[in-house]
Image (cartoon, rainbow, N blue to C red; front, side, top):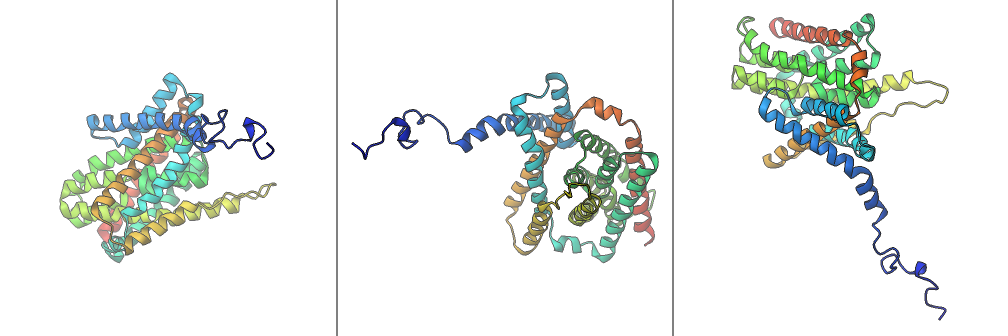
Length: 351
């Protein structure tokens, strides 16, 4: 009968016995390509959160980097997990940075006043330029110096990840920068509250100093509220003002990379679309009132994705490569830590 299929291969996929058991190509790609790596990264992230419960000192992000490096060193990187690790390291990290925009509103930035915004902006710009310049003088690789500069001047690991999208440094450089920034940010979190009475800082002044100089958001909150509620609230707003400046900083670095990439192929690094998405989310969050529960869920999702991305970087990092960087980058991070603390303190006290 000519109107019937000539063979089983002519039947539709859902009726053909030869293909009925096969999965959709997209599902096959996800399950066989991305899922094994995602599961591995999620397991390491769970270990980081569990370890944070015991230590209470280091953030899950730095613990995830360390756990990923240990896993890779001891057990190696499974070949079937590479796609999922790469997905976590790139896609998840970018999406997490976009979600950070939900922590910001233009009203909150205005809460510290024009003078406070000026102090934060001046500190950020001066610290970034100081760190990059000193890195060049002492022989630190340019990309690694930019990562340390971004992590110190803006918002720690999140800024390092965002900056790396345009600088395209090695995974070992990213891991080194995150470790160094976490170390000195932790020192600032523990030490700065003890210095407030010595420098004669009231709660507002101390909060502004902590928010303008300490590296990670969590570290700023931890230091700020040690000196009172007003200090904690002021520190948080000042820090989120620094986070808001992540977008123009990444755009500027992207433009510099494009201008400096005039090789024979004519290829230029693209400006990251996630920056535009970040700005759009901040605008949306400023205009629309989002329930507190949803805000909390988004903040948790962003932190988990950032932690997963850094766990993936830990898996990709080579400890021997990090060791080959020597102590100069660590000294650069220490110098940047001293500079941002002293520079911002002078502005808070005398400007």
